Image (cartoon, rainbow, N blue to C red; front, side, top):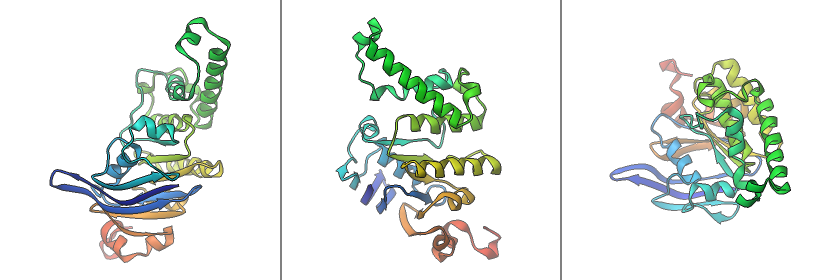
Length: 255
């Protein structure tokens, strides 16, 4: 589904990514882990179109996407969340989910002016989808609350719901469990596993290894902009290079 081949990204004299090659198969949950500054978010930015590689290719369902704009990539079925939450803070939770669906609509400006049947049918469909997602993420009680006023955990769940409102085939999650307690993290993991059962492929960046081991079928490890290991969660847990670079040595007291 997603293929990166020799992807590099430099910022002046700083090489954030160096010849990264990886693939994400359809209907998998794939983890991307590594220390702070390893290049993980840079990689997600290149996949989602916020940034572009200095060299190398990114293909999605057989089509090159590495030079496309973010909205073009979203139209092809890729959605993402952010390490730093980026909701429309002055809109309500419901409005955040409604606005994210409009790019898939077919009603014209004229339809909205005269409240045509096509416009009303579309708006009803969007609202039903939004209400379903609010319920799914236990946010129905704050549907009409301003997104910026919601507690941190609710904002995290709302951002994930907003990404899903675009009906993606591939969902990119950038540290979705950041700031969550262990119970919230476990429940989030259950939601991510549900997505796989519904046919959504997931690539997740996360420092919380309990979540990674809960949800992931396969893991890539990034360090200093390079892939240093890949494998199943159990293989990665026992990989000496990963223990050295990320998980920490047992004799240093790290997990």
